[in-house]
Amino acid sequence: MDSISNGHSKLFTDRYMEWAVNFTDAPPHFHYYIGYWILSTIAGRRAFMRLGNNLLYPNLWMTILAPSSFYRKSTSLTIGAGMVGNINPDLLLPSEWTHESLIAALAGQSHGAMIH
Image (cartoon, rainbow, N blue to C red):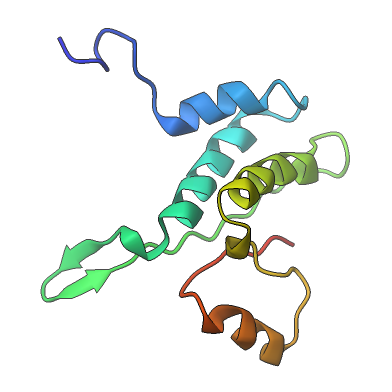
């Protein structure tokens, strides 16, 4: 019996969701998808799929849509961004930038996350 079938192992997204719901009353599924965002941001260009002779790197674009205030969208994103920032603060790109400053921020790295 493997660890998944006996219930002892959970996906990161499930564990993150269970952890993050303790900090806000945002809908739990916000945290589930933010867990995927965290994974994709941390994995960066180390994860890929072969497509013929090419490597296909994941690009994750995510939008959380809900009415203002009550659903705690910003709070949910801040929790996830805090985790990414604790692992590697360079992965969090500035939310306001000029073309020149964005190019400068990406000059030393091939990926990052923007939150607006």
